[in-house]
Image (cartoon, rainbow, N blue to C red):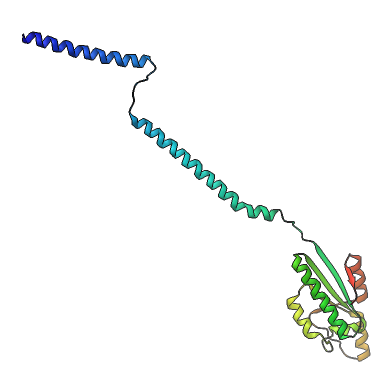
Length: 204
């Protein structure tokens, strides 16, 4: 009886083993479609999420870089050379009103183009009796000249050397010129030369 029971157990175990072996063999022949651990699927999911996060990070970085460059691109589109303007103002009379009018015009023109963001140069040329405007000992607008030298550097002043020499002979003394002005050989020639270069000319 015991021998019979032992034989039955061995037979059952062998049959189970054969059945399992046949199952795996069939799965391999069917292209390996048998169950695999779920950890593999989770790893793939983690990799997929990681790739999406990296793509979002790269996209945000590119957008930030683009935004940082946009001001530079805007500046690059600005014209490299702003429009320039040049004006001559002539003073040839010893009249304080005419001198102040010339200075008023100079300040107004300079401010006008400053507001537009455009360049401007203004030159006040004096000769004849108008040289008194730039004489250090007789100028009625000396204080304004000193003020404008600081506030309106776009305006420069030229004193006629020929007139200075004539006054020196007539008065038998040196004719001092304010430090804000420059002496040129001839005031009239200076006006002509600037006009030939395209400067606009105005006589107050």
